Amino acid sequence: MVDMDWKRKMVSTDLPNNSPKLSSKLNITIPSPFTVPVSSPISCSSPPLCSAYELYLRLPELRNLWSSRDFPLWKSEPILKPALQALEISFRLILSVTSDNRPYINHREWNRRLDSLVTNQIQIVASILEEDESESVPVTDGRSSLSLLPQLATWRKSESIGRKILSKIDNEMRSCKYTLGLGEQNITGKPNLKYDSICKPNELHLLKDNPYADHIDNQENQTLYIIHQILESWIYTSGNLLNRIVERIEQGRFGEACNDVYLLERIWKLLIEIEDLHMLMDPEDFLKLKKQLQIKSNGKNDAFCFRSRGLVSMMKKSKDLRERVPEILKVEVDPTGGPRLQEAAMKLYAKKSEECDKIHLLQGMQAVESAAKRFFFSYKQLVAAMMGSAETNATASYESCDSLSQIFMEPTYFPSLDAAKTFLGEFWSHLG
Image 1 (spheres, rainbow, N blue to C red):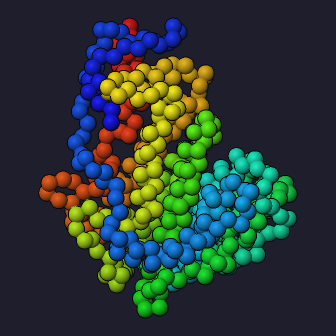
Image 2 (spheres, rainbow, N blue to C red):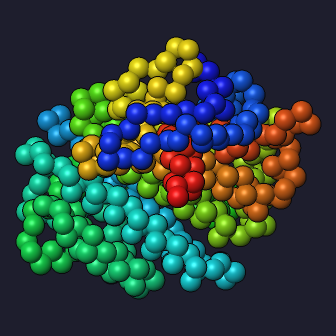
Image 3 (cartoon, one colour):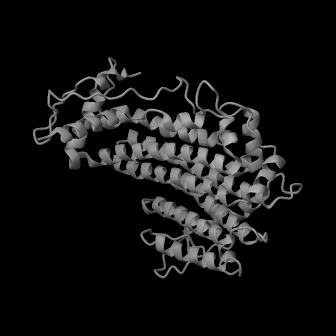
C-alpha cells in the first residue's frame, strides 16, 4: 500500500522547460480523506439471496446465450452479442408496456423513456461496431426475420415508437461499415449483420416469462423482470469490455483502451437510466409485488443491488483500473510512499500532444469512477423513492453508514492523479 502522508507535504517536480514548475515556496494542505471501513463495501448479499435473484431472472439460461461463441474468429462477439440481446429484450419491454391496458399507467412518459433508452443502446452498439476493423464480422444481404422490432413498427399501439427506432438505427449506424438489418431503410446499401445468428431472438424470447408468471397476477412482475434482464445483459457486456481494456493497456494500445474506457462510462450511465424506469411503475402495484415476491432487506448492508453478482464484479473491476496507472505512466510505485506517480502524472499532463492517448485514458478512468459512484448514489435515492426512506435506513447501522453510502463517499480511486491535479491547480492559481 502507498503511504498517503506525502500528499500533505510540499512537492516540487522537474517538469520540462516549457512547462510550469511548482514553486519551492508553494505549500498545499490536502485534507484527510473521509474515513471508511478497511474492508471494501463492495460485496454480494448472502448466497441464497443471490441465487434467488438469478433464478427469478433466469440468469443461468441468459448467461448461456450471452457467452455462446458462434463466430470464434470475430473478437467483438463477446461484447456485441450481449449488447444486441439487451437491445432485443428492450423491444420486448416496449411490447409489454404498449400492451398494458391499465388506465392509470403513464404511457406518454413510458414512451419517452423507452425511446431514450433504446437510442442510447443503439449508440453504444454503433460505437462498438465503428472501431471493429475485423474481416470476420458476420454479415449478410438479408434482414432479420426473428426480431420484435419489425412487429413493433407495424402494430398500431407501438407503430410510432417502432418507426422512430428504425430511423434512429439508420442515423446512428451512419459511420459504421454495417447496419443491424432490422428493417431500417439502409439507403446506402450497407451489409447487414447476421442479427438472428448473433442475437438469437427466438431463444431469447423463450425466456420471456419468469418463474412466477403463472401464479402472480401483477403486471409489474413482468416489467420488473424485463428491466432487470436488460440491466444484467449490459452488466455482462461491461465485464467483457473491462477484460478488453486491461488487455489493451497491457499491449500498450492506449488509444483503443481509451475508447473502451469511455464506452464503460456510458454503460454505467445507461445502468442508471435502466434503473430509473422503476419510477414509472405504479407505486401500489410495485409494493404489492414486493410482498408477493417476498423481497425484503435482511439487515445491515443488504441493498437489493448487491444481489447481482455481476454488478458487484463490474464495480470491483472498474475500481481495479487504478492498478493500471503505474503501467500507463511507466513508473513503479514508490514503496516508501513518495510522490513518484504524482510527479509522473504532472509531467504527462505538461507534455500534452506527445502522449495525449495516455492523458485521455487516465481522464476516462476517472470518468468511470465518477459514473460508477453516481450509479450507487442514484440507486440509494431510487430505493427511497420507490419503497420509502425506511427501506434505505434499514440497511444502515448506528456505527456506520450503509454500503451504498460508503461507495460514493470513498476517497478517490486515483490518489496520484488527484494530487497531481491539486498541485497543478494550486500552481496556476498562485501564478503571477
